[in-house]
Length: 122
Image (tube, rainbow, N blue to C red; front, side, top):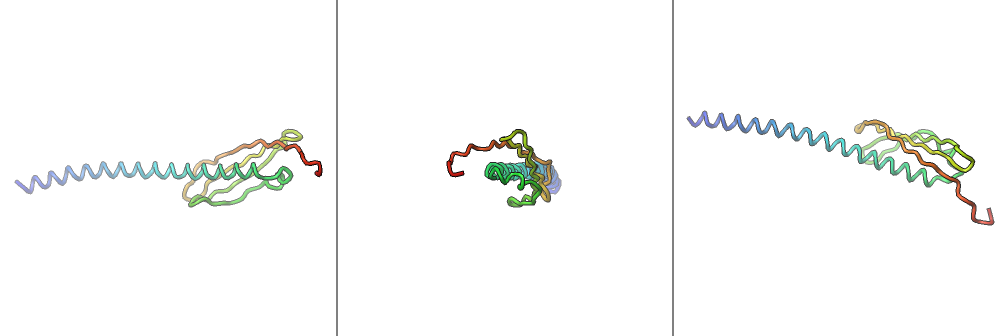
Protein backbone atom coordinates (compact mmCIF):
# COMPACT_ATOMS: atom_id res chain seq x y z
CA UNK A 1 0.00 0.00 0.00
CA UNK A 2 2.77 2.48 0.78
CA UNK A 3 4.49 1.94 -2.60
CA UNK A 4 1.28 2.95 -4.39
CA UNK A 5 0.97 6.04 -2.21
CA UNK A 6 4.57 7.02 -3.00
CA UNK A 7 3.92 6.61 -6.74
CA UNK A 8 0.80 8.79 -6.54
CA UNK A 9 2.70 11.42 -4.58
CA UNK A 10 5.49 11.41 -7.21
CA UNK A 11 2.94 11.69 -10.03
CA UNK A 12 1.23 14.66 -8.37
CA UNK A 13 4.58 16.31 -7.67
CA UNK A 14 5.77 15.78 -11.27
CA UNK A 15 2.61 17.43 -12.67
CA UNK A 16 3.22 20.42 -10.40
CA UNK A 17 6.88 20.67 -11.44
CA UNK A 18 5.99 20.50 -15.14
CA UNK A 19 3.52 23.35 -14.68
CA UNK A 20 6.16 25.32 -12.79
CA UNK A 21 8.70 24.73 -15.59
CA UNK A 22 6.26 26.21 -18.13
CA UNK A 23 5.75 29.23 -15.91
CA UNK A 24 9.51 29.73 -15.53
CA UNK A 25 9.91 29.59 -19.32
CA UNK A 26 7.32 32.35 -19.77
CA UNK A 27 9.02 34.48 -17.10
CA UNK A 28 12.39 34.06 -18.83
CA UNK A 29 10.91 35.13 -22.19
CA UNK A 30 9.28 38.22 -20.69
CA UNK A 31 12.47 39.15 -18.86
CA UNK A 32 14.42 38.87 -22.10
CA UNK A 33 11.87 41.07 -23.90
CA UNK A 34 11.90 43.75 -21.19
CA UNK A 35 15.70 43.77 -21.10
CA UNK A 36 15.78 44.23 -24.86
CA UNK A 37 13.29 47.12 -24.64
CA UNK A 38 15.34 48.74 -21.89
CA UNK A 39 18.56 48.59 -23.92
CA UNK A 40 16.79 49.94 -27.03
CA UNK A 41 15.36 52.81 -24.98
CA UNK A 42 18.82 53.64 -23.65
CA UNK A 43 20.24 53.57 -27.19
CA UNK A 44 17.51 55.98 -28.37
CA UNK A 45 18.09 58.33 -25.43
CA UNK A 46 21.82 58.34 -26.19
CA UNK A 47 21.11 59.07 -29.87
CA UNK A 48 18.71 61.89 -28.97
CA UNK A 49 21.20 63.51 -26.61
CA UNK A 50 23.88 63.24 -29.28
CA UNK A 51 21.63 64.83 -31.94
CA UNK A 52 20.85 67.77 -29.69
CA UNK A 53 24.53 68.31 -28.86
CA UNK A 54 25.93 68.32 -32.41
CA UNK A 55 26.82 71.89 -33.45
CA UNK A 56 24.69 73.28 -36.27
CA UNK A 57 27.55 73.53 -38.75
CA UNK A 58 28.66 69.93 -38.17
CA UNK A 59 25.27 68.31 -38.84
CA UNK A 60 25.90 67.50 -42.54
CA UNK A 61 29.18 65.74 -41.70
CA UNK A 62 27.56 63.67 -38.96
CA UNK A 63 25.46 61.52 -41.27
CA UNK A 64 26.12 57.85 -41.94
CA UNK A 65 26.01 54.57 -40.05
CA UNK A 66 28.10 53.63 -37.03
CA UNK A 67 28.20 50.60 -34.73
CA UNK A 68 27.95 50.94 -30.96
CA UNK A 69 27.22 48.89 -27.86
CA UNK A 70 25.36 49.44 -24.60
CA UNK A 71 25.94 46.67 -22.09
CA UNK A 72 25.28 43.47 -24.05
CA UNK A 73 23.30 45.20 -26.82
CA UNK A 74 25.12 45.72 -30.11
CA UNK A 75 23.38 48.08 -32.49
CA UNK A 76 23.98 50.32 -35.47
CA UNK A 77 23.01 53.99 -35.70
CA UNK A 78 22.11 55.33 -39.13
CA UNK A 79 21.91 59.14 -39.10
CA UNK A 80 20.41 61.21 -41.91
CA UNK A 81 19.35 64.83 -42.12
CA UNK A 82 17.13 66.95 -44.32
CA UNK A 83 17.14 70.71 -44.70
CA UNK A 84 13.45 71.61 -44.35
CA UNK A 85 13.90 75.41 -44.19
CA UNK A 86 16.76 77.89 -44.11
CA UNK A 87 17.21 77.57 -40.36
CA UNK A 88 15.53 74.20 -39.74
CA UNK A 89 17.00 70.73 -40.14
CA UNK A 90 15.31 67.39 -39.61
CA UNK A 91 17.64 64.79 -38.11
CA UNK A 92 16.66 61.13 -38.17
CA UNK A 93 18.41 58.26 -36.39
CA UNK A 94 17.48 54.64 -36.96
CA UNK A 95 18.71 52.27 -34.23
CA UNK A 96 18.96 48.67 -35.45
CA UNK A 97 19.65 46.11 -32.67
CA UNK A 98 21.96 43.25 -33.60
CA UNK A 99 23.22 40.09 -31.94
CA UNK A 100 21.53 38.68 -28.85
CA UNK A 101 18.70 41.24 -28.63
CA UNK A 102 17.52 41.32 -32.25
CA UNK A 103 14.27 43.26 -32.65
CA UNK A 104 12.63 45.77 -34.94
CA UNK A 105 14.49 49.01 -35.72
CA UNK A 106 13.57 52.12 -33.76
CA UNK A 107 13.48 55.57 -35.36
CA UNK A 108 14.00 58.91 -33.63
CA UNK A 109 13.35 62.23 -35.37
CA UNK A 110 14.59 65.55 -34.00
CA UNK A 111 13.99 68.97 -35.54
CA UNK A 112 16.88 71.35 -34.97
CA UNK A 113 16.51 75.11 -35.37
CA UNK A 114 19.57 77.27 -35.90
CA UNK A 115 20.09 79.41 -32.84
CA UNK A 116 20.47 83.17 -32.93
CA UNK A 117 23.98 84.57 -32.83
CA UNK A 118 23.94 86.74 -29.76
CA UNK A 119 27.64 87.57 -29.66
CA UNK A 120 28.72 90.72 -31.56
CA UNK A 121 32.11 89.10 -32.19
CA UNK A 122 30.81 86.40 -34.59
